[in-house]
Image 1 (cartoon, rainbow, N blue to C red):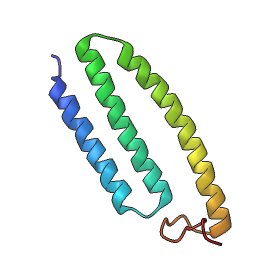
Image 2 (cartoon, rainbow, N blue to C red; image 1 turned 180 degrees about the vertical axis):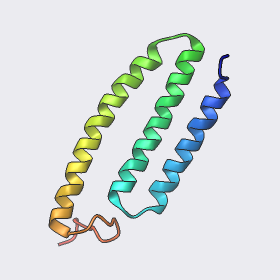
Image 3 (cartoon, rainbow, N blue to C red; image 1 turned 90 degrees about the vertical axis):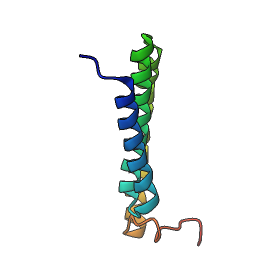
Length: 101
């Protein structure tokens, strides 16, 4: 029993909308980074679904590289959040303004 392509695309769209809502409504920097990762994973799911549907391995290879970049991005992003927390004692986006003196 094969799952139709539309199911994957609907799931991916729901995950992307949840991630977008999280980025727009949350004020905690760590939660915002997790929502961005959720959005990236929804795009990866779409690439894998289309790759499987078309019978090509190109999308799966692209997802592999995207996941490697996402892992490094998460590590660097978390390091930046920890550095800001050490200086400002908060990870609330509204309270963090490092561009002002």
